[in-house]
Image (cartoon, rainbow, N blue to C red; front, side, top):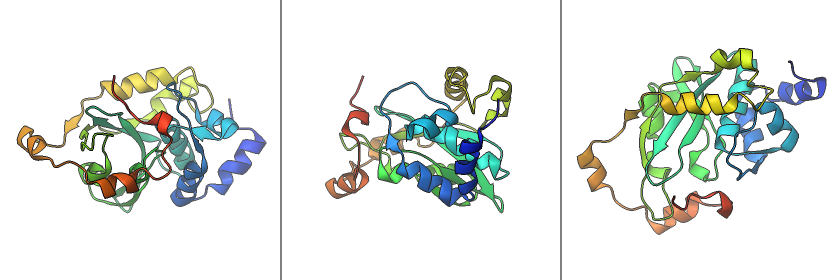
Length: 204
């Protein structure tokens, strides 16, 4: 299965990571839980975090980058997924998020931990807790090529399961976690500009 001519016209316009991220930012935020493939994102013009990361990885691949995802694991909050890329040996990321501060990062981070820590202060829940705790190693989507992950929804539960099953690396010690301060009201307000309320984590 391949891209249609109409789809390729859209993808050709996404000729830099910046343009891919702009496209993701312009999509409506999708609140349904199940993931959809990059082709369906083009059809619906909607995406949530995993949809956006999958689309970002597919679009980055067309620019010559390997299709890589990274999972950010949180407590009392939703996880978040990034599409990774490297330029001059430094990591950057693309992402679709319901929160302003959890979107893209410039390729200036020397290590993945450094990249992940750039999300820490802006990763919070409605109770004002800083919730980011761990991150996965990169998951290559090449292993799912034979299943057609770019064009079909059916393989995506397997992608999500593999991502979740990866050994995640802790960011903080227990002592550091106990010392964390609550997010101030101004930062919370800024981080939630444009947030779709239906897509915000509200507990189990």
